[in-house]
Length: 101
Image 1 (cartoon, rainbow, N blue to C red):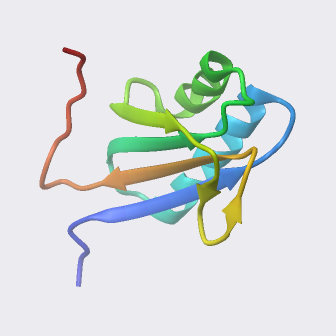
Image 2: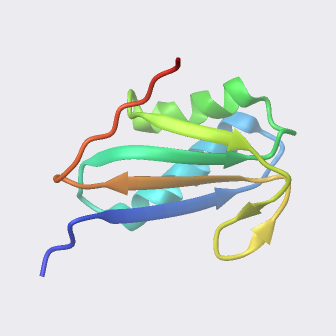
């Protein structure tokens, strides 16, 4: 039976903001498989350079709609601090848009 929504999550930790973002999103993609992505949610430690972290994530996801926030701790199976968690959502049955205002 086909799943209507697929969710994948990845966590990374390290001194390089770009590499941590890219590693977390690649882990999350590994759980999604072949499904087309709908959106992503990012939870990141404020110790990262956030624009560089986002560049690492979007180097993989392209123009995928993303929302996110900084955190005092991140949860992805375990509780960490000083890390980044990326959760990806994939479904053929809905679309997500982001905006400001």
